[in-house]
Picture (tube, helix red, strand yellow):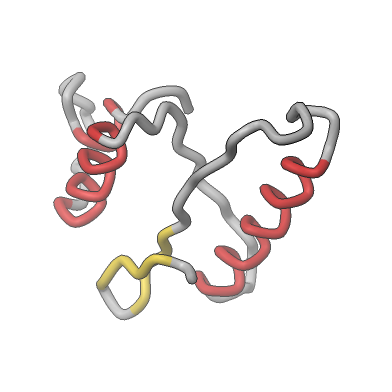
Length: 88
């Protein structure tokens, strides 16, 4: 999705938003991040899902979608025991 508004609740989203995720989204918005992505990997742990998402994004960066030397930055978070953890 483009923008962090759905994750931060700025648009008054109807669903309840996890306050921890909302804080991460607010920080991302303040840092100028324009897009958010949600990944789902059936029968895999959240950490494994985060690892697979990282691999997909790294492959996308190596593709023709990005010009050689074009900047790319992002963060991947996943839930682990009720806490959001940044994938290293």
